[in-house]
Length: 219
Image 1: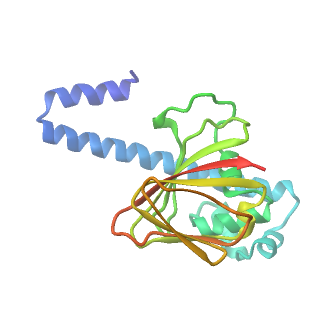
Image 2: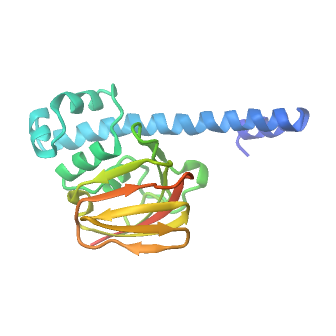
């Protein structure tokens, strides 16, 4: 057992249960926050690297993505956290899916990814949380967990879905999925396969978080 986890276990053994549980919750919340901050920093570096590898200026990427030059510059310097919508546009401009882009900043070559090591990314605009479950290998299959807060919505352009197939499996709550103007409501246990690439929108009409798994495979 790592030293920091052993210390927490020892502390919980000496403190009243309620206080120990509260301290443990704060501890793991801090660790979760550190994971997200690290991912955001690596994401900024990855975006800049993808742009420079193509020999594009900030203006070039702005024209291709529809994201302003000023915003791209702030994101690359770590001064702004990109929303899910902006990441969808930027990844599409690079000819990548959002999953492809995020996979490039994770540790490649894994075969086992423990729960505590699964990278988390939070959309600063909606509070949507994405968890990369699958080991960051070079395979053609990926499993991603999503949690969309009540009343929140996220839209992605068709370019975000190029070259991939996806299935959504609802775990809890409800999700309205708008695929090219056709809206399907998904509830716990429902599974849906996405059609050809089109502009899509996820929204949560419920009062509880919508939790779901997405299976992504390369075409």
